[in-house]
Every structure is written in C-alpha cells, then in structure tokens.
Image (cartoon, rainbow, N blue to C red; front, side, top):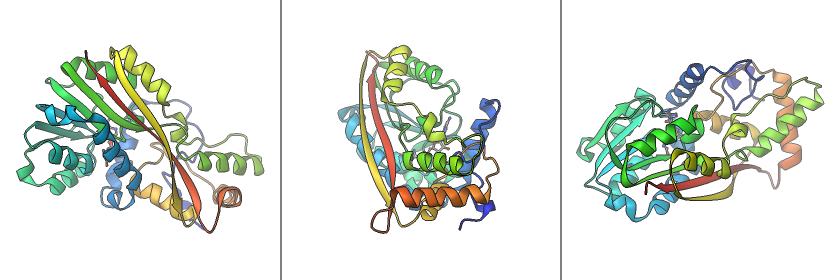
Length: 286
Ligand SMILES: C[S@@+](CC[C@H](N)C(=O)[O-])C[C@H]1O[C@@H](n2cnc3c(N)ncnc32)[C@H](O)[C@@H]1O
C-alpha cells in the first residue's frame, strides 16, 4: 500500500480549495515539476509521443521559422527536436523553473545556441516570433484566454502558434475510481483531479478564435498506457510532476478504497489502463 506521506501532491487528491489563488497555483505547478526534474524523463513516454505528434503537425512552418519561442521547455525533449528540425532559427526556450531549464541546457549543450529563460510563459513577452510552440504545457495555464491573445500579438504576420495539451478525459479511470471510493466511504465531497478541469478540444478552439486566430487545426487522440498496478501508476504520475498544484491531506482509508476501486473495475490481464486525452493545435496569424 502507498504510505500516506507518499501521497502528497498526487493528482488532485484532496478537497477542492475554497478559493483559487492563481499565484499559489503557479507556485505549486513550478514546485511539482522542479522536484521531478531528475525523474521526469524516465516516466514521460506520453509527453514524448505528444512532442513527436506536435512536430509532425507543425510541418513546414518549423523549418521555415527564423524566430522560435518554446514555452514550458521542461527538460528539453521538444527543444532538442526543434533544434534538429531547424538548426538556423533563433531559438528561445523558457520554463517556470530554473532546475528544469538547467536540465534542458545540459541536454542540448552550449553548441545548440539556444537562449534559455526562467520565466512564466503567461507574463508579457518581448519580441516577435514566427513560431510559438509548447508541448504538454498549456493545460497548466491559469489565464489561457489572455495568454493566447498575448501570443497572437507576439507573432509576426503569417506566424504560427502550435501546442499539444491534455484534455479532461486524461486519467478518467482514476477520476471514476476516486468517485467510487469516496461514495463507498460516504465522504461528503469527491477529491478533485486537476485533469478534469483541463480544456477540451472545443474549449481550446474557442479560446484560439477569441484570441484572434481565424485559421486553426485541432486534432485529438485518446491513448491508453498500461501499468502493472495502481500504485506503480501513481508513483509514475508523481515522478513526472503532473500532480495537484495544491496538495491536500489524503487519508490512507481513501487511498486503499481508490486502489481497490481502480483494480476491481479496470484491471485486465494483470495490468491497469490509464487514459490520455491528447490534443494538438496549430493556428496561424493571418
Ligand atoms: C508536462 S511538462 C512538459 C515539459 C516539456 N515541454 C516536454 O514536453 O517534456 C510541463 C512543463 O511546463 C512548465 N510550465 C507550466 N506552466 C508554465 C508557465 N506558465 N510558464 C512556463 N512554463 C510552464 C512546467 O514547469 C513543466 O516543465
């Protein structure tokens, strides 16, 4: 069984916060990912898949871009793909956290000629870009509408905004098992899972339109990962930092009930499925 203190920061396991303070949430996101800078790459298989899908979706715009800005570079997996695809562009990569930027810088090395920044991608940007790109990051934005509008303004005419993100069906088995567990224990509230609040394809399409983008292509794919046990999944989730930015105490009783509900309702052939709701968007400033 997972220990109680192993659970701090698991995906939304805890009562809904009474008020949502964006700064606290942002600090929580930064802290979660920073703590996992060393373990992230071992467990980020789906994020890598999303990065390759993103590069394929951007197509020729990537090779043509002279100025590229990457938001939420993390440990630099996408940054490396961007550099491989376009060795000439002026490439700026930023992340909320210094430890992640340092890991990305190590991955690419000084000869890659990337300008690294520790910054919040939701604060006003300087400069003009041909391509603004982000992999598996926008689901953590606290002001997505305003931020997309700022990106629109920072793009050169004909410039492209491209991102992949996770939708609300991500970890749907976990959400469902948690509901069952809470009901079985007669808990008055169901602990929230951040993924349930992520925007779906229609929401992102609408946000892009409101931000000024008139041409956008959005695609969605459901993918299923397989883990030997619920505990292994929860540990892997924790190792990527994709957990609740505002962790709340979570009782061992609820954890046991959650594992049992997940196992009973979903386990097949000695493995449990985990859903990922993947969305890719490519929008052009006409
Ligand atoms: C799931 S990781 C993805 C990392 C990387 N893009 C990849 O594909 O491996 C999400 C990253 O977004 C960063 N992030 C989240 N919100 C951010 C923000 N507002 N500004 C900059 N980076 C942010 C996190 O620190 C984390 O490194």
